[in-house]
Image (cartoon, rainbow, N blue to C red; front, side, top):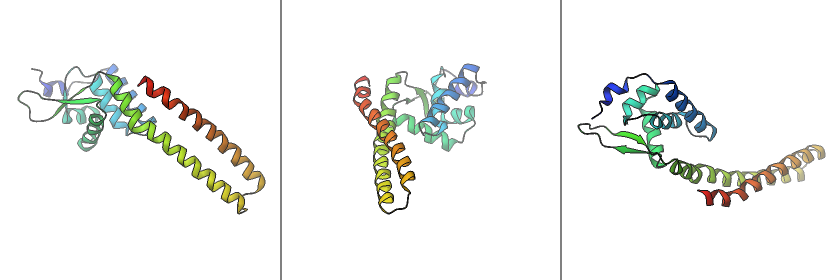
Length: 170
């Protein structure tokens, strides 16, 4: 049996630190708390299960943040709880199949955001038409805003057209 109490105080390697940083940055990019990615990165590079206390200590985060992050990762099936003989605390390990994480992130984060952004662009277009009709914008302002909004709408349509392709791969 591994003594996780001894191993939890071990210094992080350069590779572990890089993976923790990469996970944190990736999560920030998609609008998820940095700590979620850091937890995933730590567990991804950990050769043994870690408790919530171990995770919080190694990452320098609160146990509350660690708890929230592990719950999110459990929801995405990116990590799982494991039982450690003689331990009452939960321990976590990474699910090595990155496909679970990619599919869950797509389903729970990216797809709803694409849908939401489409609705928002339509609201902006409606507001722009109303402001043009009410005279709140000059002709030149209306023209510039309308052209820029059209660019966004074209980009949105391209992204929406990629959804069926992405879903086939996931």
